[in-house]
Length: 173
Image (cartoon, rainbow, N blue to C red):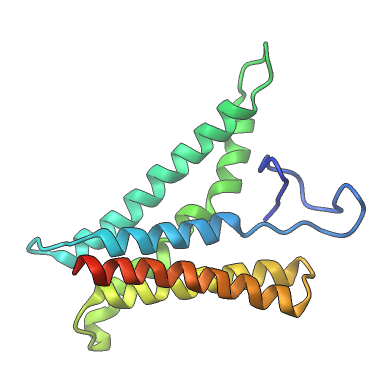
């Protein structure tokens, strides 16, 4: 994965200051938070609630991915130049972790009956928050952040995830 302050996809390799390779787990962190939010807000009471929740996760991830790709391409285009398909594909690849982040929570929903969990949404929410924390700490670690900063980034993401959990509890889904 790659990063830049303007979030423009950049090739892997040395950072401009020559400090080392870039890391970017923002899409995975954001996608995990998005998945947790979808799960928390979904009061699925249809005849097939697990299938509905899986579809909500995947479709929401795809829609947000398309929106991110469009926003980056439209926002970064140069005056007088048309957007090229290679640009769109590159941004799409860069933003794909946003979609991938819905995979594990959706899988948790799918396998929840075999694990004996009473409510697949809670399992999926736990998975989404756990992966959000994991991606944030992994990104910080791979960027060479000191252990304290890695811990702080993990803690901040845990708190954000717990806010989503608290919202689900408060709403009563």
